[in-house]
Length: 92
Image (cartoon, rainbow, N blue to C red; front, side, top):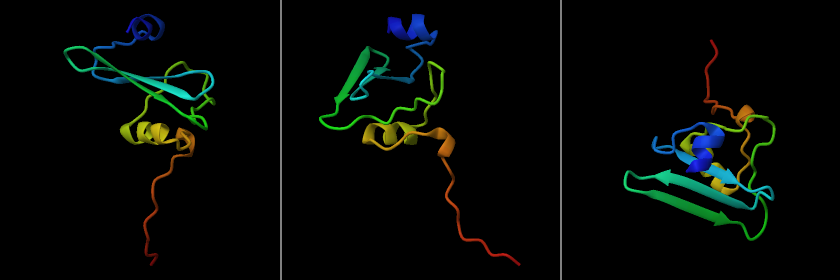
């Protein structure tokens, strides 16, 4: 909680999830305020690494629920390559 407030100037009571990854990219922690207390979720990979974006020099990233799910499931998280699905079009 203190890390969120002091290092990132964010409000840990805002209802957002705060996700942290270690340097080896094999451990992930998620901090959540539920109105009554904090939940701390922890996941450690036995093999492999989380595909944490390293392209940006910013300390924080804003993720939507789909991107967070992809990160937790081990998919590559690269917001710049995110594309919308193309549906069939008719050209007249």
